[in-house]
Amino acid sequence: MMCDSCHERDAVVHLTTIENNAVHQLHLCERCAAERGVETTVATPKHPLADFLHQQVVATATDSSSCTFCNATMADFRATGRWGCARCYTNFEAGIRELLRRVHGNHRHVGRAYLPPMSESLEQASVLGELRDRLRRAIETEQFELAADLRDRIRVME
Amino acid sequence: MTVDLSLLPDGGVGWLDASGRHSDIVLSTRIRFARNVEGYAFTGRARDGERLRVLSQVREAVATVPSLREAVMYRLDELPPTSRALLHERHLVSKELAGLDAQHPLRSGAAVFLADGLGVMVNEEDHLRLQALRSGFALQEAFAAIDKLDRDLGARLPYSYHSEFGFLTACPTNVGTGMRGSVLIHLPGLVLTKEIGKVLASLQQMGLTYRGLYGEGSEVVGNFFQISNQTTLGRSEEELLDQLLRVVGHVVEREVEARRVLLRDAGYIIEDKLWRAYGTLRYARSLTFDEAMNYLSGVRLAVGLKLISTLSVYTLNKLLIFSQAAHLAFAEGRALTESETNLARARYVRRALEEEAGSVG
Image (tube, rainbow over all chains, first blue to last red; front, side, top):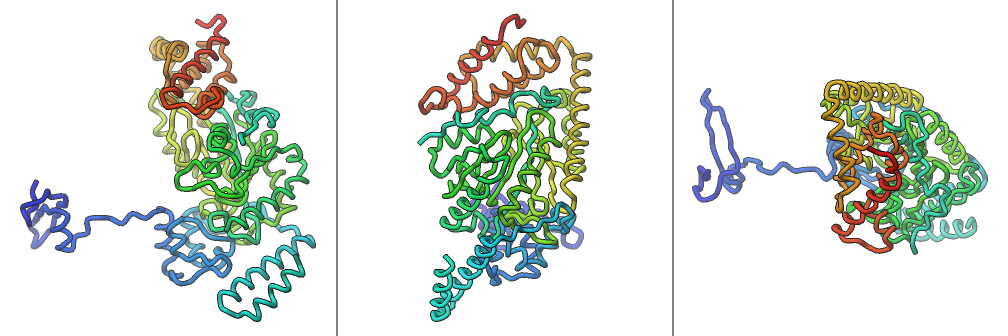
């Protein structure tokens, strides 16, 4: 079937419109359809879950906000369908709550509770992690004096 | 460097031994827990150095966990593709960890610890994927083993945990308990009586889902289905387990009933079909993977219906694993083309059946 508009290319879009109670059918090629503003390609998300999440979270988090620990953004999430780190759950909390309700029918964990072990070495590991994190941010924000100080403290602990 | 599977006491395939309950219908039971180690970005976002630090921290912890004292560690990131495929075909590592998935190239720090019926994958989508594998229908036994392992490891490593959301995972579909229980089940009776559609639809209403032989994204071949819980949040581990136990128990009953109906209403047709499947496996000179799976499904049904009495479920289970491409290449000691693989598969199956033939027929 030829395009009703250009009569040159094959019609791939079949548009049905109703005007004044009369049904009109228009068969268009992709180019002519696009010229008339008819969307012919549906954008397919790389990850269906991410797209779904986007609809949920977009209202509460903008693309520019990023995780304070791993710097992941909503755009990263949309591309992969995966969070960057544990802290993303706190940073994007409000949207996540709604998402989890949709995915699991619930957002509250009722399974086994967990208390992480607290030993000297673990405490040191978490302090070190925190210091490294602060160091990275200090470098990113060009606070070099602070960075040097943090680096010294990390060296002592290591 | 190649993988030395002889380091594993049972080659990592103890779960094939058909010792569990309903083992002619349920091949195996697997439960996995997804966990992450606090202080690092999740695997997909972590840098190489972070993943290696996760691995060394896990390695240190594993060394003092009683159930993993004898565990063997394989560094996937140091193994060639053929060895990684071998571990994947034995269901000991996921496709993603083995770096066989086009979307997920092999990561530095990708490793697995394997002990008797237990495994810990490191730097999979989550830092840790603990798993317990058992022969037959054995959800409670598998749960007891993995729960113990999880408590032991969680007492040595700080897991990422949130008081409201539970155990935190890279994918929101795993958050909460992080638990996925799955049962690998053979349902030819329900497929042949065309009841399978209804059964699968009802699974979804019960909060369960199904996949193919290799889990997520894999197709159903040879009438093998993996039934697992869909959600991980909002229900306790025990509730999830109980639901799976009840529903799979019901599916097993339906399968037994379907087999009874088949024999009653179409006995000779079924008998002929299954013997033909056996004949093909016994004499074919070239078999594709799908062909082998489908005929093995038929023979498995024949064994379940006691039409073939001298063939063991254990042999059939072994055939499923050892007739896969990487295993055939490993046995031949070289890389095989697709047609060579099909020839080697037919040869392997033929010999295995010959060995057990005895008074078959």
